[in-house]
Length: 88
Length: 267
Image (cartoon, rainbow over the protein chains, first blue to last red):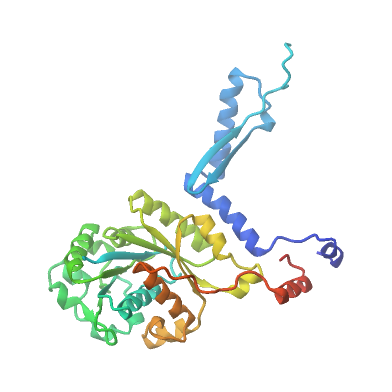
């Protein structure tokens, strides 16, 4: 990183911040006993099931973990195709 | 009142379980409590050398469990503190020589005569760990501010919760305030936030720990050791006193900010 980047306020994350972020992610997966691969499988199957009944935007689907205190939550965000109420 | 059983565990090896056990047990005895320290790391006996009692071992934990001696015969009285005892681990056997039920029976026999029983758990999550936590009333989970140690501590917290042991406390060991100020080490607040359990002690990195282990004299017995002071504070908190955390400056000061600007790292 150049001195100009630094003067413009661009900063690399510190190793403390990197450690904290990496741990946050690792702990969520450890606690839920879910690997990133399993998360991908879940996502693929959720898409398959939902799209059998509703048109969804497959590329916009996000399956993630959120976490509050010691409880983890699986969150699927599934955007519907088109999004308008107009009949086809 | 019968003794409370405290187990010190961590998951990861080398984060300071044995040192913490020796120091907490010594500090409790220093505060007038009747204490037994139990080395549950069978096959890798170490608490005896850290406490400086290695030359006086005749019988061990496995001898007691297998009925070759009475419990009292295996207990070694500390040289310096008359109310402190050590029950050493066997060196020649493995963890399967003792069961969780054996540990419960053994501690139940000790409870009426003592105030605290402090158990040093082996690393890992197998039989030895299960033996160590089976009789525990309170579990002290020790970690260093490093990703691998914190991750393992989190696993241990999960396992302990699964055993329905409600009372768990966190000890953060070997904290280097200078590195935290440089943003190159996880801060106390980061670790507490990630693990979400109650903090009972912050122990600063202290080279005196190595010297004290060399001599077989726990740092808690020395007034000039910062880590020793931290362990004495933990002992008082365990005894129910409200002791403020030692002033360890973790936020950057003016000079740290200048230094970081020069090196180009974020504050």
